[in-house]
Image (tube, rainbow, N blue to C red; front, side):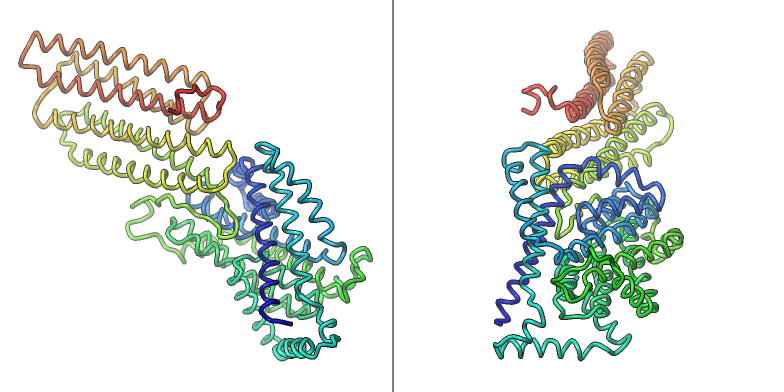
Length: 585
């Protein structure tokens, strides 16, 4: 057999399998992404719920790497705590064992006869359907491709007995050399286990997918190239290799995100360590259990039930690892906290930058949106803090507030940086094949972020105007001061309103309230500016002071306009049918 052709057939089969997994996973995200995000963000309140969440999520998207990258991403955004993330990671390890069970059924029926009809059902839905029906068609196509890739992989790896019985001398020689190599590293007790474990690590690192590595391992075992003990040791190595993806994804993220990645590595390593100690008794138990499988599990095409034994081994190992370590989640959290220390200056010295995190194999763009939503709420919080700071500066003319002005300037700088981060993040998210609803969400969020950045700039101009007023001893009359405070109260109400709608969503009542506040600020600006002009005409010495008042009024109205835009956009985010044609223009 031509080695190059053999290798390319294996790679091609893996390519179909991985592409099917990618298409299916992304289709599921578009079909149920909103619910998956809510589950991930809200249903992980304890470690057991976290395990269930990780199990269901990984079972759906068929990629533990994508799930753990998502976990790191959510921890980086503060949507999950470190303890919650460890539970999800545990569940992800168990969820990925479904792959082995799918592959083990290869001998039960012809996957090609199932795969092609599934693709046939999904194709019309994909081309004709809209929204969720289109995404569901994509799920079926991906599922069919995944099955077909497994079928091709099985067909590409020849049965060792058929090769040894071949009339072609070259084929027999090649088979004997491969079998001799495997026999040479087998049968040496723990040394052999460690060798095959290392092979499992390297295999997972090369294909960047524990599911693909598992597919190769089970197929080789089914076709008789490696025995049960050797393939079980490779599976243990794959459990270590799969942690590298999350570790790489955590580079440049927050401290807690790095800790979540280390917790994944530590959890899997601890499992492998105790399994190495109990490897042979455990494997013997699984072997016995496999030999006593019901007749319905047995196939005429297989000389042994090694595929099902591997699936049992993988599932039991991960289940027992969870049962052993789930009660030590707080201790694991403390250990990784000591492992990854806070940067100098403490946790609050500088917040983590928003960072786009993705999986090489599966695009998780649909599930990245909650991070941007949370960061947008943080940006709104900065504008609220800045306006509170402005009021403290305005209301305390007798105190030297130079340090406070510097702090407020640093907040404005933070707002600029966060705006840049969110915008870049959303643009990168938009490059994924998002559902139409989420594509609109990204567009709306980009506008909200832009408006909030304008609010922060206008507030800082207010701070500068007030600071200059005091530095040049331009004291306002009591009447003008009260008018500014009256105006500022309207702005405070509008800021509180857009803070609420960015978290809870905007209702029609919220929109009407925002429009009323904006109209009120427009009326106040005109009224207060006229009064300032009148005071200037009566007393020329107050011209410069009254111009300060007019500048403040103009900035107040600008903030109100931007704030209304935020509430409008948040409302249109939930009510697409209400968007006027001229709005996006």
